[in-house]
Length: 454
Image (cartoon, rainbow, N blue to C red):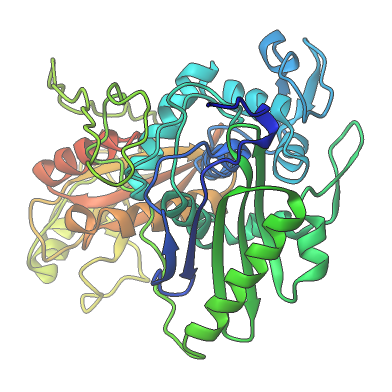
């Protein structure tokens, strides 16, 4: 005889994984690759993308985002936003991270991508770039939806990326309470944070289909452990199990280990939306098929960015510095006295062009830049964006240089102040190298414009 059990009495599937956060080594796993409902662990990805969008200048923490009817209608847990209301992004981030507010999670996704469906596609693209190969997102909050699935392994990977990719935001997850703009909110993980020594995050999750989920991290001395549980039967039993797993991790992990931070996501090949595998658990028996729409219909040459006057004019690039100076003198170019013949090849020389026919006083001087270099033919450059501050522009240049070393190695980084902001440029490239760099950066959704020698 079959006896129907009440829904609440049916335990959700259990899965667990323990990882040394410093190295990424897995110390314990159980059903770690089984696709299950992640519940609000989903919000780790929503927050990861929010941090990424702020860093890229897509949106500001102080942007007042508009709450849609869709966001306001999300079921609890929620902050209580009203349709048409505006709230700062930073306050919604706090509410989503600490209170696990569904209305704020949806509002964040819509503010960044325009709609929750588009944001879900970005979530999937980011998941693939992070190595989360068995995860499919359908929404920004994690409420149960067909095909919205992940694994203990993938969520541990995501937790580690949150920790190392955006350390400036990580303290958010250890706060017991936070100001969410319209009211103060309490952390859903505060019991474990208070009870377990060294615990400082990361995210809880619960739905009836998922059970009580948690990705937790704790640090003791030089050791840091990430433990993940899916399918807990209650908050208390889940926390007790997480504590056991963290203890196991601290016992197994070496007292000293070199920190091997995870690679930042590479979006180079994920240019199309995720369109395959809408759900179902593979139970680790067979990998899912992911198909990306990556066919290029039109191959566009990167366009040169228009150069507004007055701009420095590149008038000479010579292998021999003395020869270039002699030619400059012969052409009545006055070389700045601070530049000597023995100057380094990459020095920039400011000069004023004087007429050989008219008297000096009657000639309007024109600013000229002469770049003396031993790398002939590198007249081109690229622009990778305009930013609100010099610091943001310099940071973007450094990050771009690190991520695109193959084509930008040896180029010169410069920040140019304009009326509308600070432009981040790479100079000293050949045309071919500039084109290649722009194509590769644009494939990662990084702004890039070529700058010609004129």
